Amino acid sequence: TDTDHEASGEEQSLRTPIVAVLGHVDHGKTSLLDRVRGSAVIEGEAGAITQHIGATAVPLETISEISGALVNPDDFDLPGLLFIDTPGHHSFSTLRARGGALADIAILVVDVNDGFQPQTLEAIDILKRTQTPFIVAANKVDTTPGWNPNENSPIQQSMEAQSDRAESRLNEALYEIIGQLSENDFSADMYWRVRDFQGNVGVVPVSAMTGEGVPDLLAVLMGLSQRYMKEAMAIDVTGPGAGTVLEVKDERGFGKTLDVVLYDGSVRTDDTIVVGGLNEPIVTQVRALLQPRPLAEIRTEKQFEKVPEVRAAAGVKIAAPDLDDAIAGAPVRVVRDQPVAEVVEEVQAELAGLEVETEEE
Ligand code: GDP
Image 1 (cartoon, rainbow, N blue to C red):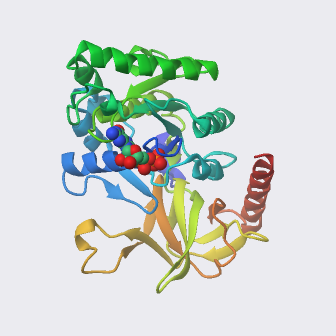
Image 2 (image 1 turned 90 degrees about the horizontal axis):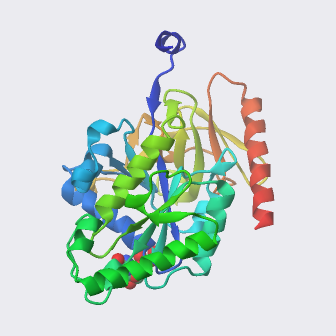
């Protein structure tokens, strides 16, 4: 109950679902992420999207502005979506969280003309194995012969506005993709026909070039998260943080730093943390938590600003001593009200799990 939480100092909150983008090379992963970020900047108030370290947060209000009638903010209590900036299934498969996938949900990008390609199949296998819910972005609909672009429009509206010929060419290509999904054991349909997103994969026709279908993509991600992930997103935001290292980087003035996606709890300056290392877990103390400065300030000031605390879900740069042996993909844990040795053991166990996983691949 709430009183129990208050008594123990807990603060229950719903965190942002973490979204990853996968797909075959050149099918448009980067362009689609850029488009989502771009739309959020254009539609939202200044500062509506926040650039994190390694990730971009798009708040519910901004999603609702981009998606218009497709997203009524009153229907949601999840705070938005956090997109991991590095697309590709390689990064996806090395980014784990307590043995599962770091991403709560994924977008599988498929070029609508090219259909399934080798890396699409690899991505499907990884999504299956990690049991990550996903939607398919059937990208580049604007390349359909005779296509008449409608910048940033919801896709059904745009499809209705096409010539019969263009519409049926696109539909053919889309059904090809639906067939390929079904050959890979995923029952799928156009997203607007899907009732049960747990048993069926929704296909969203989009163009990263024109923005058509982007309102739908965000609406479907948001809807799916709200419907099926709400319980998993309920966390104690003041609890000991847990995250995954995206990268280990040298940063002028800070030495080696960790770029981390935090998926649980919080991390504060001076916290003791345990990080997976080359030979053994590293126990160290947070010297600074760094986030990118807002765009407007970058030119005149330093690149990062220090913050006292970061709460999940978020991307953050952690500066701390002794990080030379830290490794990308490793777990990071905050030690709070728990013996250090216990946390070290947990991190060790998680690392052992990671190695087995890598050998299998
Ligand atoms: P990635 O390798 O999956 O990240 O693919 P990119 O985002 O780099 O895109 C590969 C190429 O496809 C680039 O030349 C993009 O400009 C182009 N592209 C991506 N999305 C679209 C789209 O929706 N329409 C068109 N016409 N071209 C696209």
